[in-house]
Image (cartoon, rainbow, N blue to C red; front, side, top):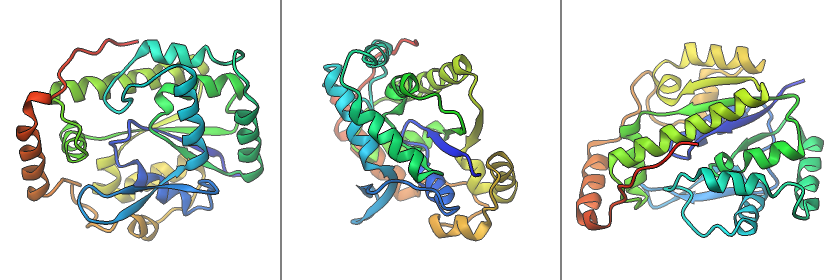
Length: 253
């Protein structure tokens, strides 16, 4: 039986491509999936994020009294507050969702809010039969992507945010003795043959280059860099909003 899969991501790492690729092996991504506006074209794309999982994570934010911006703020205190909700709130809807996932397996989760909520979910379920993929990406590309989304922040702030999320996920995996494959987005695109072999071996799948080309329409075997136009646009957005930039230190867990 295929293992269920959880993609661990900050949301800036090309995770929609990886999730869409794995979903081609027959994985359930949800009754509804989230659609997001492209930062480069006037169109929407499927993020392959389970909309019900998003709704439940947002409910956890509300239960914890969080009104900040998870996509720019790293908060160990909020992780603790959300984790401590287990056993203190009515969790019937969360358990109903987990039961649905069990009925639909194999399933795949990819939700950027999981760095805040994964420990809460762990208290409801042991994740037996699941495999985790920790997806990262070069920080320059992450900065361009974030800026095009109108997240005005310094490179130093973004790298600290990415490092803290990676460290938090790594700590979670080690504490719970969970299987994980570290994967670099650039490796998937630039060295797809070798990376697919590693991914298939880890998950027991038979994904092909053709599967990858169905979800990644740009040329393979080349570094997935933003275009010169994207760099220029990001730099212009940053300079126009320089006075509003985020540049604050972020503490680790």
